[in-house]
Length: 344
Image (cartoon, rainbow, N blue to C red; front, side):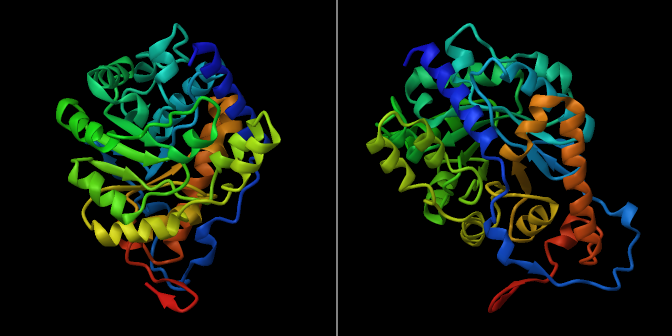
């Protein structure tokens, strides 16, 4: 695919996501914490700190991958990096394919590490780009160009199946991931983009040596619906829109993978609307919680807008800890949580 076509696709994606930023009623809405009326805690002393890839974080939030080849990505990426450094959060950049294959780096350079020297910074490539020795070379370059602490490999078979010019041949992807794990000098993270990762797939990824999995379940941005908006014919739109609700809800995928793989680090993303959803995700087995589309409009505006957005989520998470009697994230992961017919 031509660079101009890739860039246009990324611009289309940004525009469509920005037009559809109303929060969905995600899968975490059915879960409720048991309120603790006697927390015996000081709210300001609740400890939300954690670590990712040997770097400290002040709160368990990942600013998830959301941009790639659009010219607007330069300011977006700088705003996100500045906010992540200010707040002590992790940052996963959008796909670096266009930046690696063209002269448009989209702000995905070592300037990001200069802006955010202390945070966990994650590079990003699609699964279709890592095949073969050329793919491993691209992966090394993706890590080097931003001095990343890890590489995200994103799985998006549904989106590729529905988009014009998408990658159709997914044979050999698991083997390529396993080879990449062995050859890359940094950890490999694998994520979906909104349809979820099942326990069975997670098991295969863990056996391939993946260091961390981002569940990225259904409940947030539907990339099938996004591709439906981009469709050039009524038939293409009808095919895509049939899959608008396709996928494993984030809470279900998170529980299933955690039950199957008790020790592997997990990121929960896909429909995280606020800090209460983040608290629920942490209770259901996540180590880190990711959010992307909900912060996109803030990222277009300014660093201060991104900081304000995540400060709200952090304060909501802190209050959720306070009202469950949890002094830290370890205690939050033991807090009573229930839904109809089931209590954890």
